[in-house]
Image 1 (cartoon, helix red, strand yellow):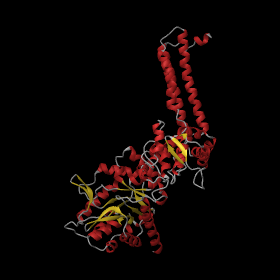
Image 2 (cartoon, helix red, strand yellow):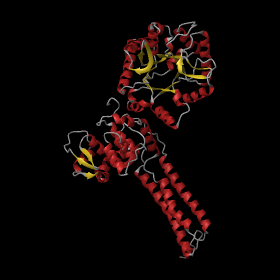
Image 3 (cartoon, chains in turn green, cyan):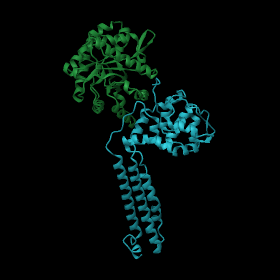
Image 4 (tube, helix red, strand yellow):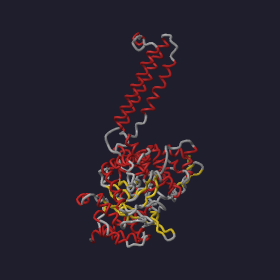
Length: 281
Length: 288
């Protein structure tokens, strides 16, 4: 994805990660939500009800598929059957881009059911990039990759995370879905400076941002998408937008759902940050 | 007279006539069905889900003036103009401030005086001229968006239905009479087909008011606002979402809410409305 291709991607604004229990409120406030991100796996092997849901959403919103189980870091290559189903879904939605995580969720034929961190090694970069090359043969739509949150650093690291992500993005020629909350949470749990981390990334490749609030468990900050976005993450988002030009920003919320107006307030706040920051820049 | 008793149809033997009769039934029903499909499948898009869906418009689409009247009384109950006691409606407040009442609701407050059986009220109110006039705007709008068939189309379809039913019944009756005159008593199957075939035609072709788009639109609305039914048990009584809930899914969907006694009127009497699965809303989580 060269600079020209990046420039051609549309500005989507600020949206929300779609969750079925928010459906009615989303439709009541369609005018305040610029686009939706859907979990791709929820619409693979669909029931008739899910088909109706997807059709209805597609007719009212721009939908960005967010995959969680391709397992880009799995050395045994991508599940072809799964990939074909995902390609069919993406073709149907015709989104400007789609996303997956830099992680692995499957190994040795076992589905871990969790976004697990990869060792920051050259071998892992090759595995991820080979898998992406395989995906790109089947899915033309631009793929953007998301940084995950993790609680442990694996032994035998050959580089730090920002270099690992940068090299994957450059080698696979993908965009970046920068999860600002994950950057903040990792910086707290692993004790590093989030701004330095950001500046070491190829920020010209940032296409989309994620933001959310996590919760504390003892002395660990958990990326649970269960709380309102804290000031620290708002600040980090502002600094990120000063450094790059994300085409879309998504609020993620999975648990402890508040009154919908609180989610709308967060969406609106992100919109204001983007507008004010861009004006200043 | 001779030609009535002596012609190709009259002379057909029992089993031959039954075969011929069944072919006529199939062709008549099929032609009515195709005619309905052609009218219903006018090329137009299903409208988008509106941000502020109008419960009254949806109620009218779903069930004509009767559903609109049910909703109007629900609103009067919400605003404490009306109370439900033993299946009867009592007006407890007749002072109308410059409120949010529509002209129809204001009229009902003025028009009905003594406590009345609710079904009497619904039946009379739905037939009032003012109710029909008030709902005319919905009718026009829904026709414009191809959600309801136009009055002309409905009449046209009704004519087809009546003509088809008469044709099938007359053919059977004619053969029955001719057979009896000629001394044949084995006319059981003909008699059965004569009665059943118009009913089959009616069951397939009677739904001529709502278009295919209208049904799809209702389905979309119900799906989009499905989870409001779950929320309804926690809403405050004055929440306008109750109106949309009843508009979309019928008054029976108010069971378990502060308006359960109102919903029970229809359930206990067996006149439950067409409410099906879930609920709707009209403002949003933040009262907007």
